[in-house]
Length: 142
Image 1 (cartoon, helix red, strand yellow):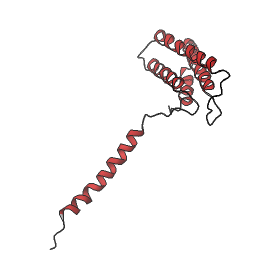
Image 2 (cartoon, rainbow, N blue to C red; image 1 turned 30 degrees about the vertical axis):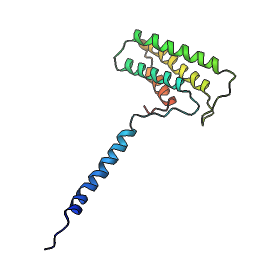
Image 3 (cartoon, one colour; image 1 turned 120 degrees about the vertical axis):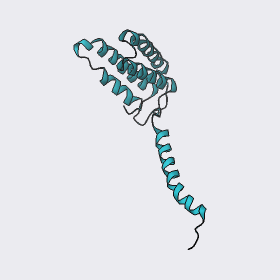
Image 4 (cartoon, rainbow, N blue to C red; image 1 turned 90 degrees about the horizontal axis):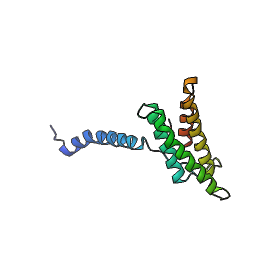
């Protein structure tokens, strides 16, 4: 009988485990991360993400209809200010030709649409459509 070196046997057993561990770690680290779309300022992105969080909290019952209106209206007001500030400025454009003011406009639109649909919910308003479109605009896959 020939003796096998112990180091080689150990390596044969642990190498696949290390590969699996690294693969799972890579997958797990990429989950939940969102990249800010090209042409969108950090402030507009953060306002949009704050709106998504508020709407998500409303959909899951963490906050009530009256609790979500004020903060969302404040976000819309700030987005409107940003649009006015950006008027006439030549800012970076996204691959779709959007500028920061365009993103502010669309985010504001979908937040306002959510508020309107939420208030008409007793008439079968669909708040999820506005939410889904807002998520897509922010580069989220919801």
